Each structure stands twice: as structure tokens, then as C-alpha cells.
Length: 317
Image 1: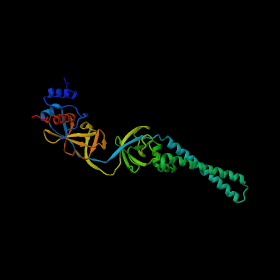
Image 2 (image 1 turned 180 degrees about the vertical axis):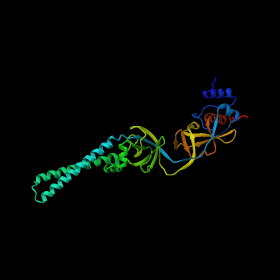
Image 3 (image 1 turned 90 degrees about the horizontal axis):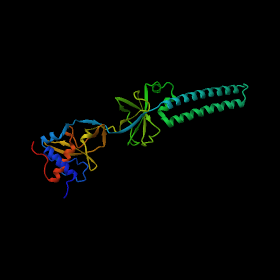
Image 4 (image 1 turned 90 degrees about the vertical axis):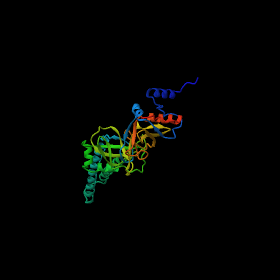
């Protein structure tokens, strides 16, 4: 005797409880998806099975990828500033001393050549020290932050030093090196960060381009966060699809739209633009349509069962 499959038992169970063939949760089924891509479900079945719809509204969206950020520890930067300032002071003093002795020697003062050479060596060593620290700054922090270090009383650097501002390092995952980083980026909690410059170093974990941003102090040092990293100036118009509305079949994402009181249509959507809790889509579903936000699995199962049996799952309202 051939026993019913697990799917058949679930179909029998749902039919017995609700009195209607609502099928099974077949999003993982290996059988072919229904070719009709439509299903009719009576109003009382919709209410009994908890199918809910929401009229979706228009949304403007700027294409973006996920940016991975971290609040920088400023100790190395500020230590480098102190070292650079000390080296520049030593260079200035050594240069003045060398030029003083050189002038005395030119006017016949009793300055030995050995003393003059030693003073010149100190001056050249101090100049090399400044150059080495500048190379270190460029390699670790880039040209913009190096200029901040070299300028006395830079207001942005002073804001970092006194804790009014913080430096963020953000890596744009999946973004190519040709992408122009946005001047401003939202980093959560209503905070907005402003671009400083590209970092001379990539993120070693994801091999992605990395950028420095300046923001008002709001997060602790070392805090890691994600942020939407816009990769295009183009603004798209579409709708937001919540994750609960999506069913997955054959490696694709599908949603149901109610087209009349009892009819539903299955639509293919793309998941190119992830949003918090779902996806933004610019095609397939349109503003003003009624999106099924609960019960999509049941509709798919009923559509599948109706396709297999050649009948409909609607019944009378």
C-alpha cells in the first residue's frame, strides 16, 4: 500500500481544518513552479488562513552597498602629531644654529670647520626625522590628515583632540575603486559624517577601498557599525518589500499581489538593493498595489496544488 507523502498529509490536515485545499508550504519543493502564477482564494479562506495585505507606497532610493565602519582610536594620530611638532621644533633650532655659525664663520669669527660640520649634520638629521615622520603620516593617514598634522591649530584636528569630533574609517563592501565616495553619509542614530579623504590602506578583511569620515562624537572608540554607502548619484523610484512578504523558489524571490477581492498574482522581484528588514525594488510591484505581507507561503502552496490538480483553490466567498 502506498502511503501519502508528508506534503499530502499537510494538505489533508489543512483541508480538514479550514475546509479548503490550501496546500503546503512548498517554497522548497523540487517540482516545477506553477506556470499560471495566479491563484484565487475566497474571502472567508483569506480570513481563516490569516492572509494579510498592505497597500504599498512610493519610495525614493539611492543605490547603495553596505559600508562597514569603525570609530578610530586617535592615540596614534595625536602621538604622531606630537612627534612631528617636536621634530619640526628641533629642525628649526638646528637650522638656526647652523646658519648662525655659518654667518660667524663668513665674517672671520673663530668658528672651526669641525664645529660647523657637526652643526650641519645635526640640522640634516633633524630634517631627515621630519621627512620620515611625514612619510609615516602619509602611509597611515593619507594626504588630507597629514596636512592637518602639519598645520598649527587646525580646527578639525583640535576638534578630534578635545573629543568634540571623532574619526570614522568606513570600508565600502562590493564597491569598485572607481566609485566616488559620498561627501556625506548617515551612520545611524540620526548622525551624519563628512568625508575627509580616502585612506591609503584597504580593509584587509574584505579587500575593499576605505575612507575617513568626520562626525560629531556620539559613539565609543572601537565601536563597529554598518551604514548605507551610496554608490550612485542616480535616485530610483519604487517600493520597499518587507522580508516577510517574500518566498524563495528555485533560487529566486517572489511576492504575491492581490489584484481583486479574491485573486492573487505571483510576481518575481530582484534583491539587488537590500534595505533594513527587506528590499527596495523598482520593477515588478508598483506603488498603490496590495502586497501580501502575511500568508504568501499558503498562497504559493494553494497555487501549486491547484496547478497539480487542474482546479482552483478559491471556493465561494
